[in-house]
Length: 216
Image 1 (spheres, rainbow, N blue to C red):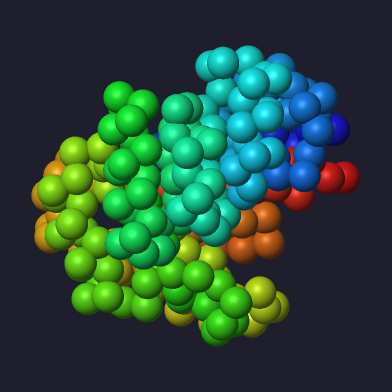
Image 2 (image 1 turned 90 degrees about the vertical axis):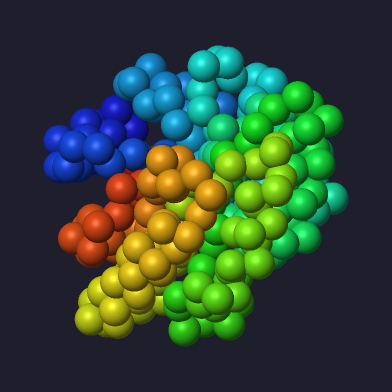
């Protein structure tokens, strides 16, 4: 079932779109099924769970952290994480930089923006609010800012979801010429199982899919 779901998704994805299989709460066996079907990028939202799965699963997996990340948990994933999608403060960016330098790494990150109507979602509220992090990132040699991420409102109103994704695309386009490494700033991470088709239409090049892969 997992292999079939992945095949179906891949056949409809435009060229250049990265598929992150959201494996949080799923077992190592389920992840291995996706791995054996060719999937190599997996997303987790709990640092300790991600650390344990990294230790138990093939080392060529690229692990993306996609949930809210507490500063005191960065140390658990810094040695191996491929991309952190959810940088929502300068404090967190600085801690990722500190832990990256301790590990002798440069960690790729995305800036998370709050585009949804729910107050429970995290992220910078606009371009200007994020510029302090972008400017600080230019002086932090352990992190590389590679784009933006956001989550749309959990609603059946496709027009609202479209507006929110278009707002994030505009943020991405406005920020790109203002970052220090324009060539690295290339990821627009938006779209999950319930709204990824809208996200792709709005220009997403990274989608985060869980239930559409791991559930019947």
